[in-house]
Length: 259
Ligand SMILES: C[S@@+](CC[C@H](N)C(=O)[O-])C[C@H]1O[C@@H](n2cnc3c(N)ncnc32)[C@H](O)[C@@H]1O
Image 1 (cartoon, rainbow, N blue to C red):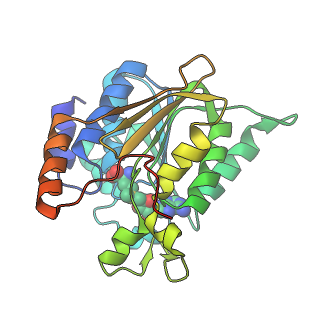
Image 2 (image 1 turned 30 degrees about the vertical axis):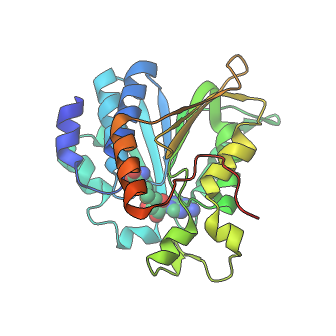
C-alpha cells in the first residue's frame, strides 16, 4: 500500500508521529526486512505503517506485541485497523499478560539449540514501556533475536516520567511513579539505554538520532561507531517556537543532567 493511502487510513490515530511513520516506511522500502518485530503497538497505527510498507515491498512479516490488560483502552483496536486496511495477512498480533519480555523469553527458548540462539528478526522496533528496568532487559533479549546487519529502532528517546507527573498521572502502563527517586523521574530512560547500553555495545554501530525523539542503530561490526543527529525543518520550527514561548532551552540528547 502506498504512503498516501496508509496515511489517509490511520492519520490522527495515536501514537506515532507522522515523521517517524514516514521514516519507518521509507526504511522498509529501502532495506526490505523479511521479519519485523514491534514491541508496543497501542492502537496499531505504527503496525499499519509497517505492514503497508511490507505489502508495498511484496514480502516480509510483522510480529507485534502489547499488554493483554491494555486491550481495555485500545479503542480502536489493532484488529479494527488491520481489518479496515486489509493488512491482516502481514501482521501477527500477540497480547502478553505482563510484558513483551516474556514473549521474548519464549522466542529465545524456541530458537535456542546447543547453547546457541538462532536470530530471526531483521528489524526490531521498541515503542513500549519507556522504562529502564523493562527496556534494558528488552534490548538484550531483542539483541539475541536480531540478525547480524539488522536494525533496531527506539521511540520516545527523551520521554520522562516527570512529564507524566506534570499531567497529574501517578501511574503509566501499570508502573507507579510513587517510589521513584528524582533521577528516575527526570532522566529519559530510553535515552539512557541508547547511550549506556546500545552505543557502547561492540556489535552495534551507525547510530542516528532524529528530531531528538527516535534513534536507530545497526547490529554490525563493520559500521562507524559514530552518532549522527538530525533535526527536520518542521521539528526545528516547532522547537524554536517552544523555546521562544517558554523561555527555556531544550536539552540536547546526552546532555549532562544537573547533579
Ligand atoms: C506508545 S504505545 C505504542 C504506540 C505504537 N507503537 C504506535 O506508534 O502507534 C506504547 C504501548 O506499549 C505497551 N506496553 C507498555 N509496557 C509494555 C510491556 N512491558 N509489555 C508489552 N507492552 C507494553 C502499552 O500497552 C502501549 O500500548
